[in-house]
Length: 436
Image 1 (cartoon, one colour):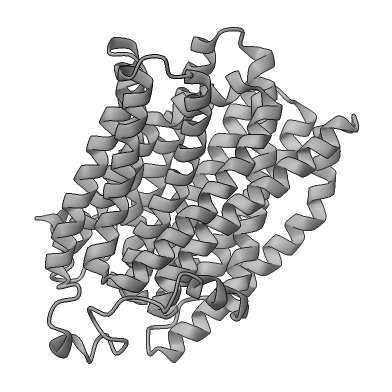
Image 2 (cartoon, rainbow, N blue to C red):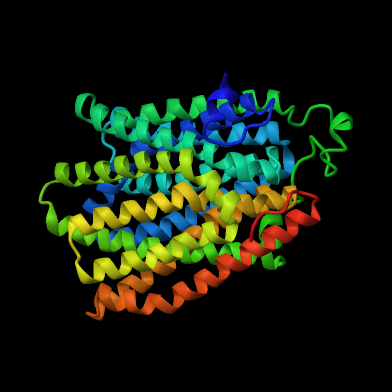
């Protein structure tokens, strides 16, 4: 039944249905969890002021470093079937603590807790998704990734739609703090989906029986020490190329975030109007992304290749910068941000995750976590510093857009290079070659 339904949108091989379903359910749960609290996070950010947001980016980077060290230790001590669910149980426990601080315990400074919550949800977003895609790149072969990652991503997008819908309804009826509890419950659903995937793929079970398929050894912890991931990154040109791609995406997204905050603050006068605007944007992004993942993602990656799919983001980012520099209005912001984020979530992100299907297990977990969290958040800080320098000098966003043009050209070249390297690695592994 699952294979027949999914087969309408992508090529599904016999026996892939159950794994595809629970992978989609896993992604659904973590994105629904995040989008439940995302509008609350963004509103707390605006209330804190732009200068405070820049400090919170530094706090997020610090939190990311600490989480990476803890995760690096975890993956060296335990097998995948243990450390993957432990990650989400840990995040759930922290959400419960925030709920107690905000709702139950009297006399707590809610401003300080709110800023800590902003930092935590920013870390939660990139870290939970990084662990998810690392697990997917480990479970599915490279050829399966090109066919199925779009559909798996659709499960997450549907979760984003549901999370955004729940955020709007629950915040009005039970209050915004109740969203924290809902977010924690959804992470528990993710842990259940992980347990099903562990059974379906027999993760870390029967090492001798699986030795031919997993020569690195089932059931063995990944890596050697908490710094293994960082060492893997700095010694691999391929991983450094992925770092560059993600860094340029993160820096450009930070520029957009601050410009978005300025436009929204100038356009809407009340907290309710701003929160509603953010929720509307999220709903449009997730709805259109779902359509793209169902009908376009797999076809684009299979027919045009990873390089072309990756190149879509730098091209659209430059168009977004130009449009906002010419007409900085809420309407233009909504349209361009929706287009850019749909391309990222609907096409570019699945293609970027295909890059990790052709690396070693240590790189899929330890190194990938460093790239997706530390590199991403460090680039946030770089972007916030550049934005502050340019805005304080009075040059404004049009100048920033002009300066970003040559950087976009570098970004495009990196996208094409990564796609060609992925194709070579896939061929070396004996996989069917992908278009470059």
